[in-house]
Length: 495
Image (tube, rainbow, N blue to C red; front, side, top):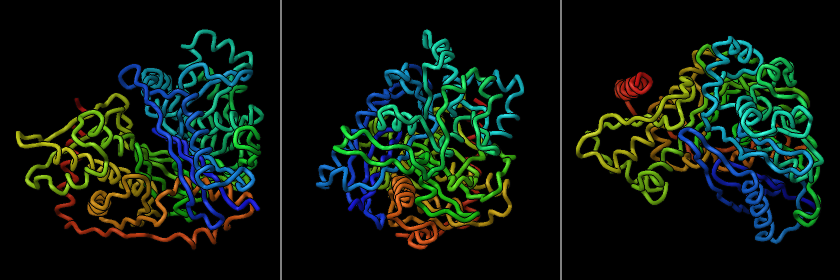
């Protein structure tokens, strides 16, 4: 009997495969990192072929180590880095260029031009998004304009566009299925999330032929079956969701007012707003949290571009740490008299500022500042940026109130960081027993669709916290620290 679910978690820096049993307990994991390419300042690319090879390697290894075959797997769920853009040849499946990553800022001038032409209001109303290089649409436009012959080939129907989920589905099914789910479609800046369809007007304004676009399906749906040669037999693909929406599902945030934040390369906070698509007045995003049985559930989202990436910068850029866990001990040892503030705008600032051209800055350095103070500032920047988001959410949606924040992702394992987060928010922070919530959400979608996993209500009841962090910082000190952060951000934006 096939009683395992395989989650493919294709992230910004690595591809992972996680096996879950029918009770959605993790039973095995394999991970493959891949290269980051920075061809120009503010540009970030991935090699789609390397992404594909790392996904294959991770899936094969996790099956081998668990001594399982394709027959033992009931379904695959896919979750992926969102907005990252691939265009490929329909005949060969070969990408025409490296993937342009969600962090990439090369299309900032095009976004500025479209904003001047008055397109932003239409974009915001239809898609819930802002005109920003973050999203896929201007990345597609750049590829069609820049890669020789691409525009003519696209007009002739020879090219396909997809976010990473679509590219993987195409490859896994041997080119038989060109599809995405509603959550990933909602991040392209071409999908009308009110009508639930690709928008012809926006596609025309961006010069994107609609023939390039994938079919949009529910998050739990039939996305085809894998080619038998890949894993020794066919496996149904039954669940797809962008990584942040998958984490929302994995955190069982099914009720309006529930809130989660995922701390990976960036940080993304989603607030479930139910049937209501909230038009933000504070430069947050309206998005689809998930879509089941043809019905979308909406969310307010705040996006922070740099969270764990600040720790990676300490490790790979400054070389002041050898591994990420070292930051906790350094932060604990930092001089309390020094208040170094890091604004990690390495690829611009996300919500609620949306300043594509901003760059990182450090304030409060003294002659005695060192690795410990920088490490503390990097971890604190995550808490400060999260508060920016939650304050904006509260202003946009008064029903929000004082919600408990459910956290996940790599940085959520740091007790120091999560305690500072609770302190600066002045709100409880719950860390779940299963931190692999992104993969868990994708696995639940596939398992629920296949009929071997719990329904929505039972899944929500099974969620449990490993630890709750409660605020321990006095309100005057919390206000003082946050005001210092706000002055640092203002100075960064003014530079």
